[in-house]
Length: 189
Image 1 (cartoon, helix red, strand yellow):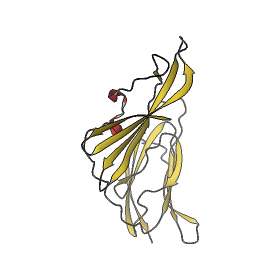
Image 2 (cartoon, one colour):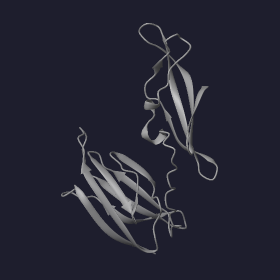
Image 3 (spheres, helix red, strand yellow):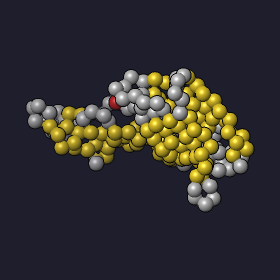
Image 4 (cartoon, helix red, strand yellow):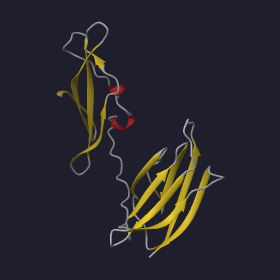
């Protein structure tokens, strides 16, 4: 990659790089792609967002190319502002694992007010924020999506125990009334 320019505005700065995509258009003109890195000045310069330009750009003379600020996605736009950092999550009482199988539905799981990754197929991972001791509020929002493959969704949350085994604390596998918001309270000891 080759550095092409710096973009600055207020507490934002961006670096733009160009790379030959090793492709040519119908006229044989080489194509390039761009990468942008956005920095914010928040008690020192920190990376805030990165992006690769979706579409290759044409080099009119085979050497030079043009990058337009309008090509930046919203998270990389130089607006001169520093977004506040997200609130810190309290140290969890227990780590938990989330397993989602939801072909034909989008599942948005929320554990103790913290949204997890929305899933439209299958996914397994760690519950962001973990589980609290005693009472945990869990909500699951199911939305039907158009897809050729559809099945009954299954969602479960497993508490990770000290001996590295797991204990199931929630299993959601509705046969009817799948769409909508479903709320649960589960206890963890």
